[in-house]
Image 1 (cartoon, rainbow, N blue to C red):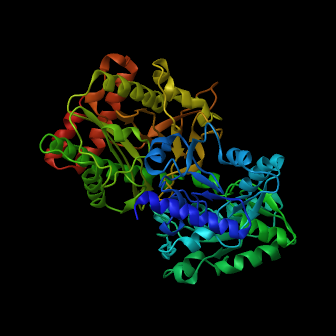
Image 2: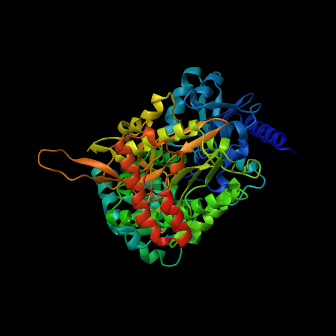
Image 3: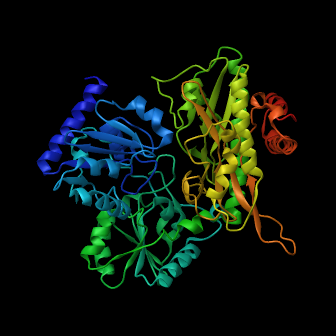
Amino acid sequence: MDKRAEMKKRVADLRARLKALGVQGMVIPHEDEYQNEFIPPHAERLAWATGFTGSAGTAVVMAEKAALFVDGRYDLQAARQVDGEIFEIHNIADKRAHEWAAEQVASGDVIAYDPWLHTLAFRDLWQHSLAPAGGQLRPLAENPIDDLWADQPAPPMGKAVPHALEYTGRTAAEKLDVISKTVARAGARAALITALDSVAWLFNIRGSDGPFTPVVEARALVMGDGTAALYIDKAKCGEGLRAHLGAAVTLCPPESLAADLKAEAASQGIMADPNIIPLALVQAIEEGGGRVLPAEDPCLMPRALKNPVELEGMRRAHRRDGVALTRFLAWLDKQVAGNGVDELTAVEELERFRAEGEKFQGLSFDTISGSGPNGAVIHYRATEETNRTLGAGELFLVDSGGQYLDGTTDVTRTVAIGAPTAEQKDCFTRVLKGHIALGAVRFPKGTSGSSLDSLARRSLWAAGLDYDHGTGHGVGSYLNVHEGPQRISKRGGDVALMPGMVVSNEPGYYKPGAFGIRIESLVAVREEPVTEGTRPFYSFETLTLAPIDRRLIDVDMLDADERQWINDYHARVWEEISPGLDAETRDWLKAATAPL
């Protein structure tokens, strides 16, 4: 059976199951039971139903129609992967899933959902949207996709292992004390922690249950008295975990969480993040006579504010990562000057260089290796079907990152394969001007990411150009490469940037069918010296250390300050990276970082 026939059969089988259940449609999110961005293979239900493999999206399957909803990063990918005769494809900037569903339902129609895959925020939004048309929501006891998916992989069973104080900078007991006090101040009985990176951060544990993110599947209840219960499968408890957690933490089986929530909820409310808590656990709290106290995950802000030990670990990790990326870029230049190289080979070689580095644990996300028109697909992933050889006169965009015991990296560089065109240089330099403007900015305390976003776009806007993704996302410390609450974006990004936060600086430009450009480095928010009569100001320390392709820079488009910025940055790259290189690569880097 060919792919199109297989996808049609899957949707038809799902519709038959929904009809048997007495419902008229179903919402299929990308998220798993923990609201992860990068999900284990067994949770790829959206990909099973639609063929779309991006990291964000939602499908709605009705009796006669079906639709997939993605953001601007995935317009081209969705069009490539999803059969348009089976699914309508919508950009969420134009129409969102709940709006489309409200247009499809008639009075009395029921839209089903898996309560483990959706949140309190989902229920509130969808009920409000469906109500005017008489539509209703209904939770399902079992997800029909799990029954239809014949070769569905098993859930992950990685071990939870202690993460050393030399990397975390604070003990789990210290962190637990902070979160417990937050619970007590809120007047709640407990805080339910369901985000896997929050659980990992709070208890100083790491695991291998998440693709690209070193987490273990577990949830926690943190009480206001300084104690906590960690709900984790016994088989996941590695050697030394019990002693590491201490007497204040009780280990409990995951299946007991719902009953415990019912019992605890009877006395006081349970704090939970409405954007993370699965509705299955909301139901347990409500059945116990309690209520959810909507509140931001109390680990979110403390986790984002990296302590000095974590920041120094990030610096060390980025130096090692810079050595690996520089070796790769030098290798790439040599290869394309000879017989050429394709996208998949580039992916393999870059990972090989990283793997040779100290403390490397794996990639932080699937490497984006896009040649020519593939670079214009914002979250492109090379496959055997799409793999291209890097061609002369084209641009090559490589967005990659590593997980190290002491830090997480994420870096994008765009390089010229052969001589670049005037258009390529113009667009690249406009992106670079935005990257420099953001990297060099000083801003007063209380400034949010949304207030800075336009700095990265100004030069592009002047030419009538733009890009359909945020300019910056938070990054964890040997945790999630996409971490909140901070971000730099024209949509959202209202959290004030504070010292210790790590965020990306990644403007770009994408010409469909031709090329993609992105320049991404990670930066840490730092305090500026305060003099008498001035208010507190912050700036960014650039953590990423890798050369920016000088061949693509139109120097005449840069002002004196911009030229100085890139020269100073390249001088620093040379100083910090060159000691870790062999003589041949060091010669290459010397030329790559020469002053403009």
